[in-house]
Image (cartoon, one colour):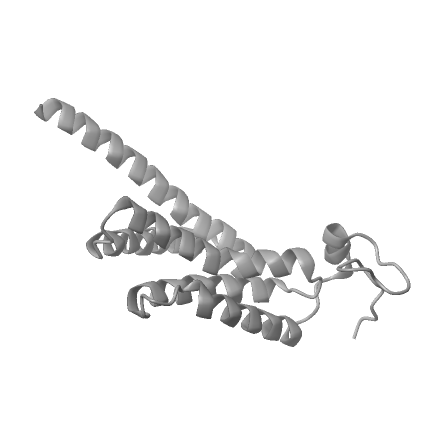
Amino acid sequence: GALVLAAISSAVMSSIDNQLLAAGVMASRDIYQKLMRPDASPKQVQRVSQWSTFVIGLSAIALTLAQLGLIIDIYTFFVVISATTLFVPLGLGLFWQRTTKEAGIVGTLLGFIGGTLWWFFGPASIPATIPVIPLVLVVMVVVSLLTRRPPEETIEKFFGPAQEGPSPGFGRVAVEQP
């Protein structure tokens, strides 16, 4: 019995450490190095990887200690967080050519933080998606309008070449650069 339990524990720990390591590397390379500090030294990237792995590990422990209860509660929590974190940034990114990278970052972070805070501290009778998604939408539109428009080549990559005249739906129309 003890040998079987040790084997199961070993398999779980092996999976968890790989996932923690991967999350730390993704945070340091994909977010820190690519978006925030492209000129970061390998030592700086390593330090961010170590800290992000530590913070992600603490977050996992905090979620465990929160005792969400049944598997359905944990599933519901992650569905809500996915909706508040990804719905608006993906939707605006796909359908509004004025969406900026900065707005996507702010919207994703706001959706994650807002959804998590609402889940734990908001009234249970109101789903987190009701207040958080409209808030993320408004903030992303404001941030997009306050930051520089994406380069024309980026817009063409996702929306196709600009066309003259009125645009049906969400198509591309030639727009003068400010």
